[in-house]
Length: 610
Ligand code: CKX
Image 1 (tube, rainbow, N blue to C red):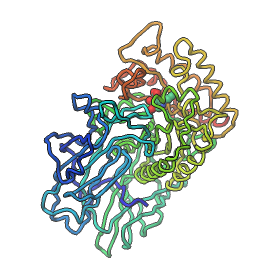
Image 2: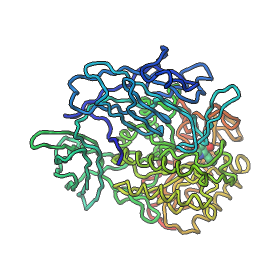
Image 3: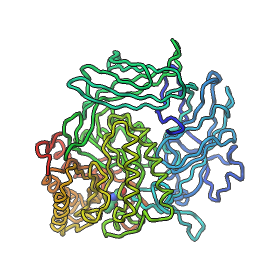
Image 4: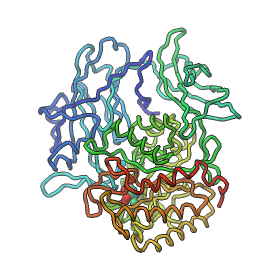
């Protein structure tokens, strides 16, 4: 069990939440002198920066944008006197990639991993009815002992530089919200839910973890606020008659209220919106509420102009509107768990999420998109440091599942993206990760990982761990592009035939496919990078998907153009977006809209076997 609660900050009868978002004091610390110079008590300088946001794209100096190392954030925080007697907690929704937190000069928390929340309990450190100084040291260096993986090099000018083994910019800083909370000392710590449908009725098995011994009361309210079910005890079952199910694009959300009671007194109250639905894999079908579904959608990024990977509510809203417009029903949180507000919106809008842990770059390569298709082997899981990486990876899986398990939108866990799967050493590593996920998830959702181009039958040693086989395939782009597209299709079909011959009786989805396309480029007849070629590529690729009944989903790479490290293969970023980075459609968006609005949710339902 995690030391701190992952529950989203919510105001209830017993809980208080104050946002700490806004302008924070900011300083880079190139020589890592901050600690010796007692920055932890407050540091010199006057630069202010918005939180949440990545720090990189505000500045006009390249050495700041490319800065790699320690950086410091500072804010004065007022703690109300009426909070005395409760636990006072600062919750960071994320600090990329690692952080140490100090309050009034005293260290109160440390966290590794840049995309999941952590808390600092500061009850005994704060002064009440007074301002307290919060200082955070964030570090954005990349290593092979934490995820996502990469290297940090030192240039001849003495500056450090991040060299990712992955294809997105190393945006960092306090990229998500910070909250100050007051929570009762005896409090709700965690909530497990699992669903069973029976005719029109539903059973919700629940398990509540609290930090004390007082009894628990659980109630369920419908969307009109009417109480529909209740139960007593830390473990039990809520019986819901004539349940409104959570369905794709027809979400129904109940409110779950959990109270810790001391006779008639409410010790703690926590409320959460939940959706009643089941998800399972049967043969080659993915079933939602017992009915087959076909995934249409995207691999995405949290990425936009100026704020980088910083959570931005406006961008989130626009993205959901575009996804509805185009006929999508799902997305993968490539390549890290996204901001919690995005899952809340997906719950509300009825979108399906494949939730991905930040395990990307588990393949030693600074140009993974090139080398991944060459058959190169890097003995990634045979390093002396692999056990350290595994530990960090397992912790991230635990944090992600604990954070996201009650979102009805989350239908599967993606446990790695494009790892090396070709050596025997990968097998025990995968086993630990996949076992951990099934053990931690009360709903036993399907698990998957995205297979890189060279993870093909006869070579890949790890696909058997997946409940859903997810392929990232680029025939016609990285392999045989342009005028050679007929050969690309031939190779693609040969690979699909080889999968078919294995008779796995599992659903396949395409978790990536796409072609870089410049929003400004037209050419008749087509050339690679033109809008015309993106459409030809998609027509060929979709034709292959439609020929195999066991293919149960397509998530194109990528929803929008996004920032990457600069280099000869990238024109100010990866341009495989169906939309530009400013969220305007490329021509391919209309092709996809036409296809996806015609494909029914239960596409291929009759043909669910090899
Ligand atoms: N897959 C052959 C991972 C993504 C990249 C994508 C690309 C690769 C392809 C690997 O993070 O952006 O190169 O477009």
